[in-house]
Image (cartoon, rainbow, N blue to C red; front, side, top):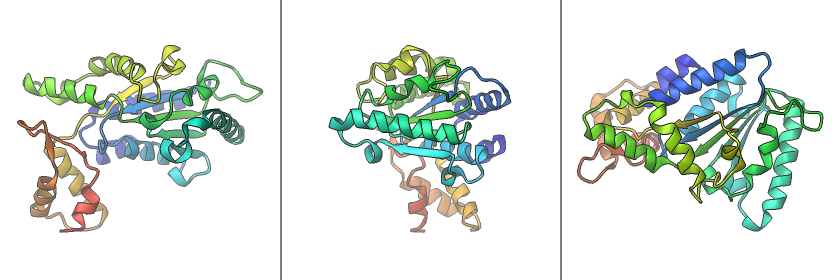
Length: 269
C-alpha cells in the first residue's frame, strides 16, 4: 500500500500519510472497537476514486472485482428521492449479508455529495461501537465515502498557503479536518448533511485531497505513459498538461479537472 500510494498518487501528502496510518493501525489491531470509516473529500480528478481502488486491491487481491469489495454510486444505486425508505432497507440488508459472509468487507460510497440526505444514516448502527448488531460483528469492516463536498474549503486553504508563499507540503491535517467536518455537516448537498455519522463522531478520518498543480498533472501524464509501456516524451507530457484549464483566473495554479482527462487526452497525441 505504501509503495502504491508513493508511486501512483501525486500531490496528496496528507491523503497518503493518513490513509496509510489509518489502515495499518486498523489491520494490526486484533480487536477493533468499531469499523474503520474514512471520508475522502476534494475536487474531481484529485485521486479519491483512484485511492479507494488502491486500498481495495491491497486488502483484497481482486480489488473492485472482489466479492468482498462493494461499490455504491449514488446516482446509479439510489437515484429516486421518493424511494429513500426502500434504499435504507436494501442498504442494511446488503451490508448485513456481506459482512456475515466476510468480516473484512470493504464498502465504498461514491458521489456522496449526490446522495439524498438521510440514506446514509441507515448504516449508522453498523459504524457504531457495538460488539454485535443482530448477531453480526461489523468491527472489522471498512467503509469509505468519496465526495466533492468540501472541495471549495480545501482549495481555499491551499490557495491561502500558496499566496502566503508557504509550501503545500506544509499543510497539515489540523489545518483542514475541523473545517471539513463542520463544512460537510452543514452542506445540504454533501450526503452527510446533519448526519448522525458526524454528530456521533463515527467517521474516523476526514481526508482532504488537495487541488492539483501543473507539475502534478505532468506526473499523471508520465505515469499514464509508463502504464501504457510508451517511452516518456517530455514534449507530449508538456502538451497534454498545457491543454488542461487552470484556476483561479489570474494565477492559474490548479487544474480544474485534476488528472481526470489525462488518459483521453493522451490518446490524441
